Image 1: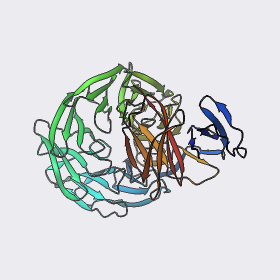
Image 2: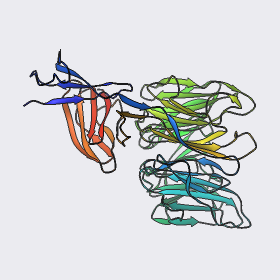
Image 3: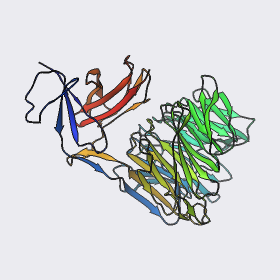
Image 4: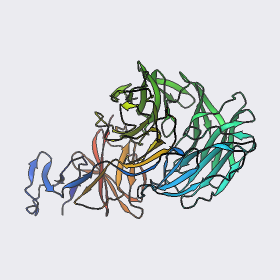
Length: 529
């Protein structure tokens, strides 16, 4: 008996599978080809069906020329749904990756004679069937309502309102957020003349905790929740605040360099990216945030930021002080330097091009950016970047108006974008909502399968995590091979989830293979001393 180890090199455009034969014994390989002798053994090139790479495409586009402006477009429940909200309208539920852009349902509050200017903010759990909405309107009585939904029904599971609480404008992200599983939802505003943030769970309309600060008379901005829901991080003016959600206790404050909306946090809250005339990064040391790195960006203003789960990959979106072009900056925190930059084409006209929102995948490989766009020319309003090939966007959408919000799936395959149907500086209304597929790799005309594997941090020192995505009823085996083809780690995988690998593996390059009946997915990780 002997053991054959199969290594798949997952590279765009690859056309072959490579098999390493771990013994010198010759087997019946003639049907595949001829073994080649190498320093580590025999190596066989096995030809496989030609791979299929579908080009990026807009899966669906919802558009209104007048009326509501949908300025929030979070994807929820494994990208199966898109829950939009905005100005002059209520919450709208769409089917996501399998939809066609037809609204599944919408929710608007009961209309009273004394309310105007309805704004709706929407939030979606990534992994559970949990969705939240916040609505605010000009009213002499209760001004804000918070609702919790499931995807199947426009009837809220519960509604909360308090006559003393005013969320202010909620038609764009930044006043509310939820954890990945939807177990914690936060909404900020003002109660009785001072700042207040209330924390909810899907099971109750009563806040389980609140944070109030009588020294602050303003609502929070750029409010974020860590992926596990344990921390709420936001800013007021030029000060960052970090609050424990379970107790509503303030843990730390940190002075930012300016009061602007360029703001992003890593999923665990350890890294905060911000800046106005410079890109700056603060890191949590266990008790406070401290400035860790930064770089001046002359002639530009900060507009948006995003941080990966590796606490190393940081993206900034800056807009030129002439409002005619934008710049993407990818910063490597471990190296303390800029990895690459990308400048949008310059446009012209009287309208301002401003970077509005950015999101990146947990591994930092994919990032989507949304902006207002120029009156004439300039860059597209939606751009997706792949970290390994930053020379140009891998997917772009040229919209008729301005984009206010974008979202991206954890594997980078799907994106959403939404905004005003005309430019943000232009009088008018209407909306555009997009669902796009950035990539799909398959072989021989097979149907798409929900199968993926990613690793972070990458590079890593010692322990790392493998994120496995399988079909809902799928199972498989995760194997890790060293560069010589030896299997150094193996574990069964049942369904999608995260696998912590704490083996004491020496420095080197390793291949991670997720094998299942649906196929094989592969990723490569580099371990350093």
